[in-house]
Amino acid sequence: QVQVVESGGGVVQPGGSLRLSCAGSGFIFSTKAMSWYRQGSGDERELVASISTDGRSTTYADSVKGRFTISRDNAKDTVSLQMNSLKPEDTDVYFCYAHLRPGFNLVGRGTPVTVTS
Image (tube, rainbow, N blue to C red):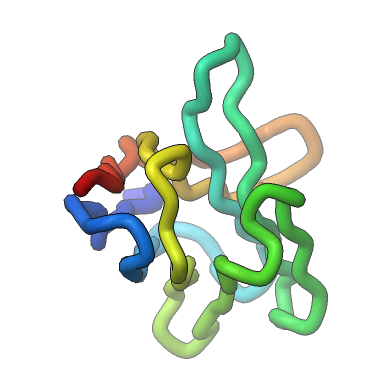
């Protein structure tokens, strides 16, 4: 089955950490760039972080730079998002994207993150 499945969300206090994981299946994971998005308050989801096929190139939203780290393990077909120094404004549903081809992305169901004291 062609899918990506997120895990690792939860409830954490401000300043805490969470690690999100995304497992891909049904496609050649190592050949696809991967991203994490979050729902946000607008009509469009917000790009949080992206990683190239070999993991050497990453990009981050300004709001998470220095706090979040995206990584991938092509041997295990997984991509992770390490989130440190979490803030209440990071509360959201986080989605894993596999960029299968231009204009076509495979998206998971999302995993919720709540940052609250």
